[in-house]
Amino acid sequence: MESLQFRFQHGKRLLLHSAQCVGVVSSGNLEIVIEPFHLNGDCEISISTAARGFAPIWEAVMHDFHARWNLRDTRIAINDMGATPAVVSLRLDQAVESMLQAAP
Image 1 (cartoon, helix red, strand yellow):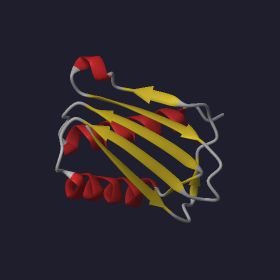
Image 2: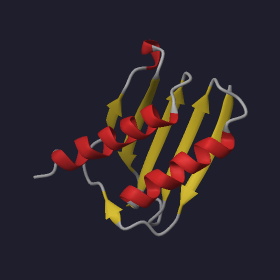
Image 3: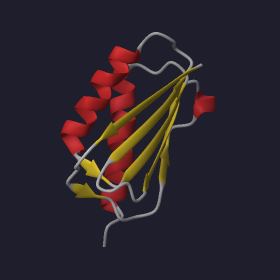
Image 4: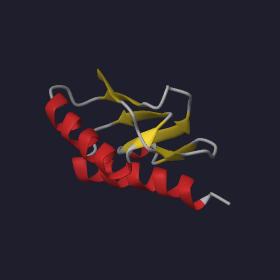
């Protein structure tokens, strides 16, 4: 297992609703938990992955995600079992979109 951490500062979009979980690790794919959490305007992403040596790819996917959503005060945990970058991006977008749709 490899653990990676990313932190993006000064986000703009604030998600106010309860935590969301998308995907399931037992499916052989990945799970993502996203939740509002006071981080002084930052977005923190923690990744646990079974695929070692892919830090540059993870970094690119996380930068792309941040560019799309620009989240603030958000904590994201990713538990990966070998998902492709496209699947990771899809699951991240699903988690954020589900929180936005829950908005009143």
